[in-house]
Length: 120
Image (tube, rainbow, N blue to C red; front, side, top):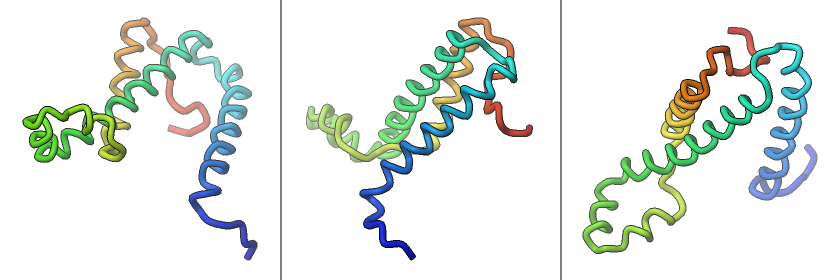
């Protein structure tokens, strides 16, 4: 076994490396697949990112409604909204997907925008 150190130190490095490799691979295969053009693709990506960020936080706050209600009554809501934690993967996925569908409807995109490298 190779001693490479602690997991929290190396995780951001390998996660960034994975995103960079996926971005490079997707950029190479997307023109061959011919789904949507770049401006529309960036619209969909931005909608997914914004929906995911907001959705994970909102559902995380709803999940913790008893403590949120206590803070709401004490007029310190800003401290709850900006504190770390209180995010959910389910809210991330659901609201990211919902935001993509709304953006596609607004922009009139009818073609597939899913993962281009997977088999349905």
